[in-house]
Length: 100
Image: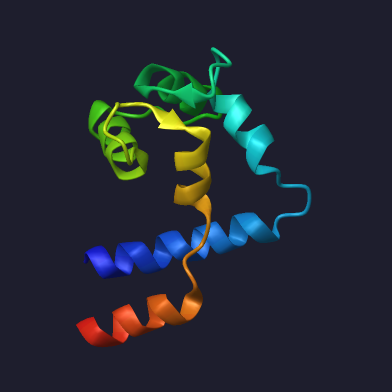
């Protein structure tokens, strides 16, 4: 189940890269309401509500946990870029083959 989620997530990341005009910095700034080069659960909730999604607490916690590499409960720009940059496709394919 986790592997299939990761495959779908990587496909979404690749799609983002291919969107004309997509800018990682601008998308981050849309979430970082306080302009302090990081965002927390509250800022993420406000952003998601603004774009039409009503997140539940579990979703917000899961997103923060998945992206937060240093454990400070905030997503820095560097963590955001790392989280949204696709993994090399060959590495992902090998991981899927190993599970199957």
